[in-house]
Length: 411
Image (cartoon, rainbow, N blue to C red):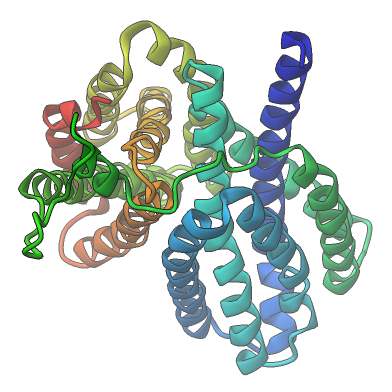
């Protein structure tokens, strides 16, 4: 097979993963933009909606934990096909819900598919990145952000045209299934692996006389080298998870509280306050498109270290700024600083080697996702005791700590 054919297949695989990330962003946005219409039709109050969102988040965590071992067993390509189909079908569920109970069931199903797709498409992205031999992970995450933007525009246009949520979400569901059918054939297949664990192969080498040195030496003892490697691996996974927790906590705070912080702290209009989230999301998307080049030049540690410091600078500006333009600059710096760190963490987790790469990634995902949930809740709790702007000291301090811990992402 010619190198040109191989290169073409690799480019198609990259495009297919781009499509998976974009599809995920579009379908999530389609649910979000229809929340007011769906909650109004199902009679869901704001307090009930908060519970249902937690149900969806909990279901996503279950999907993440299940997808990791499944991707290791059956390959990430198979899991992407299953999860993308599932999220495409279940996005229709909220549109068909008639009461809080059916909406909760629909969101739980949608959450499981979303969590499974998160892990499986990132595991596939790691395989494609490894084949490319250079950093490309951040660009995949940028396509997720771009997909969310496109989905919000499509949803807004459909509502402006007077389409019912059922019709819009049906179109999104059918479109998602079709896109999935087109992208899956171009995903990378899992390379052939030995049926035995990697640490066993290292321990069971033949000597010159043909005798096999096993870890047990006939007595059933565990190979200390393999045990130490497993311990180091577990420590590495949880260290990566801790940094992902911090960065996603800061991201969640910025996404959920930026507009309210501007309105309350500077006493602006709602329209002006909305610019804060716009500044944050725009620079985050831009930063993800640029982060791969920076990572190729300076490495993942630099991305996490200096990105975290840039985000901390942004939070410091937001906390101290008395002017709207300066505050918007602060939120923009937060977006730019947080853009590249999480993709580098996921890439490192997926490249730890062995036969459990997707499982390792799912663990890092789960811990990080908890940060995304915990950040807004923590700030909300603190805002009941102290001013909201003062509560932003928490992500400021944590991003500085993340900069100190950046060497954890070294490959």
